Every structure is written in C-alpha cells, then in structure tokens.
Length: 332
Ligand SMILES: NC(=O)C1=CN([C@@H]2O[C@H](COP(=O)(O)OP(=O)(O)OC[C@H]3O[C@@H](n4cnc5c(N)ncnc54)[C@H](O)[C@@H]3O)[C@@H](O)[C@H]2O)C=CC1
Ligand SMILES: O=C([O-])CC(=O)C(=O)O
Image (cartoon, rainbow, N blue to C red; front, side, top):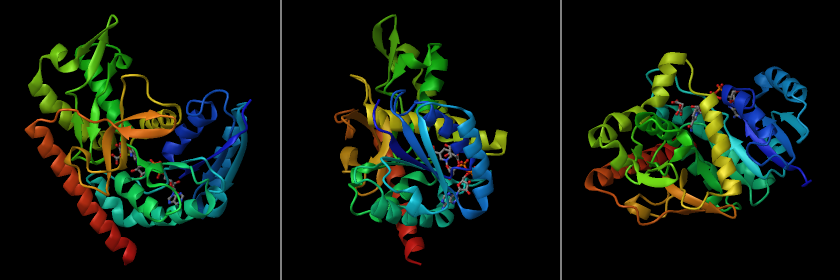
C-alpha cells in the first residue's frame, strides 16, 4: 500500500467538515488504497468540540485513516500537507449575499496562505470552500508566493452538482447520464449555469440536453435562477447553509483534481483566470476544465451567445469588485 498523505481540513469542528471528514477518511477522494493522515484545524474555543470529532473518526475504525492531528495552530495544521480543504469561515445567514462575508472572512485566508507558504508541500492542492470562495482563494494564493498559483482553486462543484441534478430531474434521466453543464464565474448569485453544451447519455447514445429538453425558456430563466439562488433556498429551509451537499462537492472537486476527468467530460472549478472567454484576468473565475496528471486546463472553443457573454461580464465585474474590497480589508 502507498505511503500515507497528509490532508488538512480547516473549520474541522463545523458542519461541512462533519460530513467531509468521513468522506475523505473512507477513500472517496484519494481512493480506497491511499492511506491518509488528517490534520484538523479550528479555532481555540472549538477544541472541545474537535475532540469529539476525533473520537468519532477513531470510532469509525477505518483502516486507511492512519492518523488524526487536531490543532488550533496553523503551523501544525499545514505541515507537509499534500491537499488542503479550506472550509473554516463564517457562513452566511438568511438575507445576506456571500460577498457580505468578505470583511469577516478574508483575513483568515491571508493567514492561511502564509501558513501554506511556510509549511505545506510546494505541490499542495488547495480548495477554498469558505465564502466568498473565489475571492478568498485569490487572497490565499497571493500570500503563498512559493506555491504555484494554479494550485489554488475555489469550489463551484456544488453549483455544478445542483445543475446536473436539476437537468436530470427535468428530463427524467439518472444524474450520472448528464454531463458537461458549465458554471461560469463567481460562486454567487451572479454565476452563470450554462447547459448549452450539456449532454445526456440515453441507452449508450449521446444527445444534446437542449435538443432533448426542447424548452429554451426554462433553461434560460427558471433553471438559471434556481441554481443561482439554491444556497439561499437551503438557508431559508434549514436555517443553516448547505453542508452535506457542500461536503460531497468538495470531495468530488478534489477527487477530480487528483484523479482526472473522464474522456470527453469536463467539470467546473474556480481557477486563476487567464482571460479565456473574455473573463477578467487575475481573479478566480469558474471555468469548464479537464484534468490530467493533477493539472487542470480550461476547455477552449465553447460557443457563447450574446446573453451568455453578458452573463460572464456581470459575474466577472462582481469578482473585480470583490478583489478590490478584499484588498481594502486586508490592507486596513
Ligand atoms: N463554496 C461553496 O459551495 C460553499 C461554501 N460554504 C461556506 O463554507 C464555510 C463553512 O461552512 P460551515 O461548515 O457550514 O460553517 P460552520 O460555522 O458550521 O463551521 C465553520 C467552522 O470554521 C471554524 N473557523 C472559523 N475561523 C477559523 C479559522 N481562522 N481557522 C480554522 N477554523 C475556523 C469555526 O470555528 C467553525 O467550526 C462558510 O463560509 C460557508 O458559507 C458553504 C456551502 C457551500
Ligand atoms: O449559500 C451559502 O451561503 C452556502 C453556499 O455557498 C451554498 O450553499 O452554495
């Protein structure tokens, strides 16, 4: 069996981590034959709760979970890690937009960027989940100059999973028969969930979702708004933000990054923009990507109509505004 890898989860005493830690421990992310040592970071007042999480992880009796390191010290948490799930941050409440969390959360990602820079492996793969995820990921990467910028990503996989599920329901097919829905831009209500290149496998034949569904009005209105506002809908119902589905998406994102995309398939990840599709440069923008050998590449050549271009401009503008605001908060 392979040597264990060290994986850090921040916000380890919180809601998302409670589901995510089990998924990582049982091999959903790095595979059933890859032993892991989990580093669990939270803040000092949560150390008692974290102790309980450690007890439960031990009580799961999972053979590939080779060690658990609970701590409130970033230097310990980030030491020699190969993968980092940055979940720890304040969640939003009803009536807030995710960018309203910037002032409270962005400094966390400066500190954690610095700690990654000093202590993590130089090829560490970093997934930012804590909101506003795209801008937090950008700030984190800026404070970790010795780690390549392409190793910092933000999570839009939950939006992708929501979109796949919504389309599968609309065409009455299993969710794994639908592929290549794209989430463009920010993990916020300006994101553009785009089904124009999505496909569905029907008895081994591949069809375009738009042609199967034959309902452009639904795809351009209700579908888009449902995905844009799904996080708020979960908060309104649960009085807490999504956690189980967020953990599943984080697990999916990191699994794809470590193990690759299937031929012909792409997934959405918030990655450093190179200006593809007219997106602003130097923001973390969600694009369709393929992954091979642990490296992502933005899928090129997808067609965007005028409406799509306008949607990309709007979400790109929001990311530029968030970047500006984050820099003000950090420098204050
Ligand atoms: N990108 C996405 O798709 C999603 C993002 N989120 C975001 O994920 C974040 C976490 O959500 P939950 O787990 O539900 O929140 P939670 O409040 O249940 O847990 C957050 C945990 O982070 C800890 N924490 C706070 N500051 C920290 C720091 N500096 N270092 C380490 N830990 C720290 C808290 O003590 C707490 O235990 C929120 O910002 C939420 O908005 C949630 C769902 C989806
Ligand atoms: O909506 C929120 O605040 C939590 C989140 O990011 C999501 O569920 O997509």
